[in-house]
Image (tube, rainbow, N blue to C red; front, side):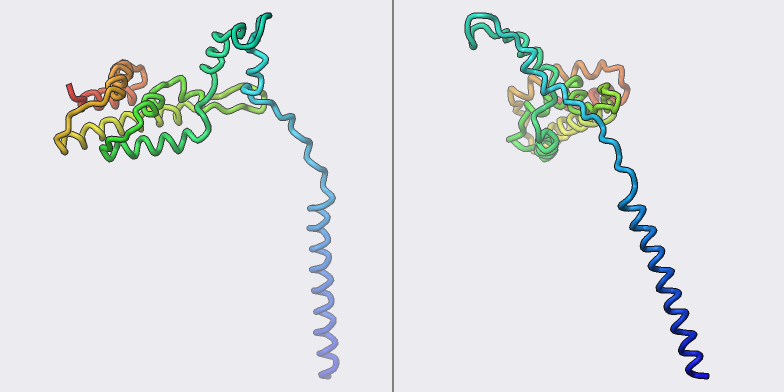
Length: 196
């Protein structure tokens, strides 16, 4: 009787092992014998075509390049790689009231067209799409950092304004007339903190 029980347990073990083996084979079959996905045609970013847009006129390289077309192409490119890190560092320095704030970077952060180019993505159909919310969030972050810099400097009784920061004042003034309500309100708050 004990031998019959042992054979029954052994038989059930083999059946269970066989069932697991069948499941493993099915899973492996699904993994390895499925159809390979069709490769998606990779579209080249527009930046790769820049050299073809630069017109070289007959007569030699430096003097006969259409430098205006080079300038226009530069106006269509996003910021240099690493811009996210530079933006975070610049806003952190401004919020701390530092003397070493790179105001040029904050001014770039307030340029709506540049921010749209930074947050450009290409759809599968080849059209460019802009993440307006992310671009404007960068701009709002810059405005808040500039206001925080002014507040911090007021508490430290330092009212000197660097010349690079003075160049930002008109940009903030123009943003105060923005049709985007949140941008307008933050620009007005930032403008109220200026040293006049």
